[in-house]
Image (tube, rainbow, N blue to C red; front, side, top):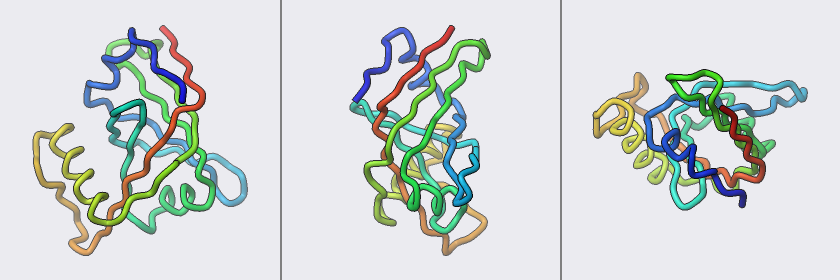
Length: 132
């Protein structure tokens, strides 16, 4: 696991919307804005089961995450690594509620689909680039 430089830890604490890159079945990239959390050297993102990023991660579990400083677009963290765990629905729901609270101060995530099943993906950073 590659450590995040301490000068960039503020980007891990702020509720920044990151860009998550996955790979489509034809090898092309797919990028989506995502909420994320960070703990114990691992990154966590969340998605509804069955969406494109969920399917891509399950089929090709190596991703990239870009976290850009909202006050300086030339200061960022770029992380690449494998998804080492895909959670069960209960953990996914708990995590999306935590993210909802982190990003909007709402302890319960509201979805348009009451039957939506969520998954949490654990990313182990193998390659880290810090700029700015």
